Image 1 (cartoon, rainbow, N blue to C red):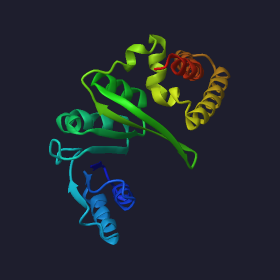
Image 2 (image 1 turned 90 degrees about the horizontal axis):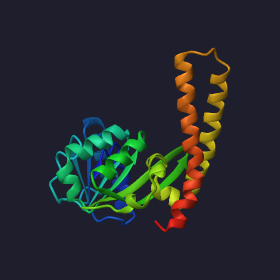
Image 3 (image 1 turned 180 degrees about the horizontal axis):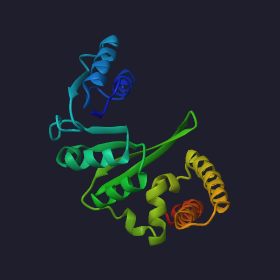
Length: 226
């Protein structure tokens, strides 16, 4: 099930590539769903891809699909869909998530709600970075117990498996982010001091510290065999 399918490109590509036998393309808006229907028909895949007008997974039955894809939307919305459709989401064998924002909040939510991150990747397209993760519902996830307390927030921000695997796209992202944050801090230091400026400088310094910690943690996680 592709939640928020938009033009339906993902299920079309997966069926054409023989990655999946069938799909359900779902969207909350009639316009995108109509475009998905048109693209499915153009590719003569009506027998393989079904479309449904649905708010999140509301029109999906418990255990109806093996995999749920929630991609291309904000982190808050991803959390909302997982929360509102908890029974349906936990009945799937796996979920593929690609939140566009608030990754720290999403990963923290996954840990608290017992979704285990089993794989992560990050790609770069047109200068933008897109992290994604595969998660499975579990009764217990001991992964986080092995991570030192001071490393947990860095893992929430940048992805525990991206860090562990030394993902090359993540490395590029960290370099780019460090340059941006350093530039912001220099600009702030030139401004007249005020409470707002002081608070913002502290925020940026904290972000730089987390960014720099990511490199240390990359090695630490790998060496610990986590």
